[in-house]
Image 1: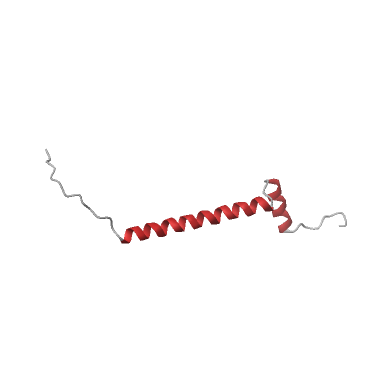
Image 2: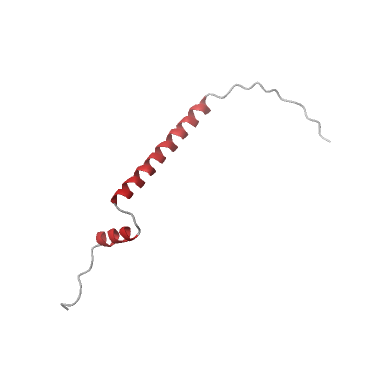
Length: 69
């Protein structure tokens, strides 16, 4: 039994997998920042749409009659 290796910790396995995938700590931070900035932009865009829906644009178009054959 002395020849068996102790089981590896999960955190070590995850770190090894991320390193093999080329995702180091700095890349992970950059990716997290980009994702959060994207979420913020999406929320700002949605808020802007909600504001513009509250005040409908003035309509100067009149209905027109269309003949049907």
